[in-house]
Image (cartoon, rainbow over all chains, first blue to last red):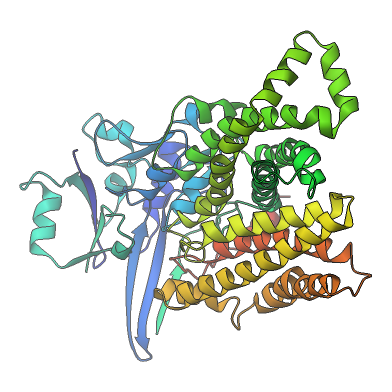
Length: 180
Length: 331
């Protein structure tokens, strides 16, 4: 399995939300629905506060509970990678995958009635391009690449910088990393 | 202090601010699925144990209720699907890791088996219906064969019905992303609740008072076991992870304490327990109230579990976006 990872530098992210707008444009996400979002996390007691911005989305987990819980195989890994997609023609809209996702990263795409989520812009990845959110980031704080390749930018960043991933304790093996 | 707020809009329907993907449709289905499992078990057991004389209702008439009850449940399950035309997709493959896929296939096995079980009891239980079936081509032959195979059918019914009852709980407990559901006790709890509601239904349906008494006694035991399983369930969550502690707090001091204890455990389990005990000691007057309360309790168990599971989560953002503000923008 090829593991694609997204690495986001929380130290250079300014929380502008361009990644969110880029995703909506690229993927035609209807008004009122979002495949990605930006979180502002504040820690400490005033005046000793620290703030972190995080652009969040589906973590394209290597052990994705949404895939294991899907009763029809509609939730699946794309082309032997960790990119989790939903095959609309197999989706009954039972919503088990929404309940199965600890990140609450899935949504119902009305009026089509099937389940939607971030695709890591696999249609762009197929052409060797970065996902829309990564390529539109004005501070260049987002990186995308193959984790199995030791020379890839994402591998080198994770080798040289401190990082975290979200809710690793769920055992889902998320593949969106945050440089801290 | 740690505070996480969304700085861009996220108000995905039925996901934010808390999950509301499954509502009464799923609760009704889980309740009726458990009830069906209980009906099938008692109907099969009364035959295998040779209780023809003592339990005539369970022996010959109870089985017919199972397909009726399950069909209502399947209808509400279907109503819940967002992509209804694609319902056939449950049957174009088998996903061994998905409890819902197991459930879909268990239902495929259970349905024909329960029809055979009904046919095997029809001549004795519902002669008028049997007459009508005999008028259809091969009807009489079908009834003959089912009656001849009545015992093997009953032997097959029990494991499949137990599977159906347990699966309704495992369906939720396998969703590890919802801390309130993530307990192995949920499967046995839903099975025992299904058996208990089925005995309550048998108390209502049975004609003979000795049969009513038998099911009241059975129900008394089952309610006792169910209370014990609920205690184990709460202990299981209460000794779990931080997320499970937060989940169990909802019913142990949190916002769902009153609905859980006052609207479910008290009227759905404790009061019928006392009323059925009175009934067995010869203090009459509650004959119908206790089983109706048990049925109500069975539904409330599913309803609250479905609700509380969706309220318990791993992520907790302060959501600043108010979708109602959008409305003001439109002229």
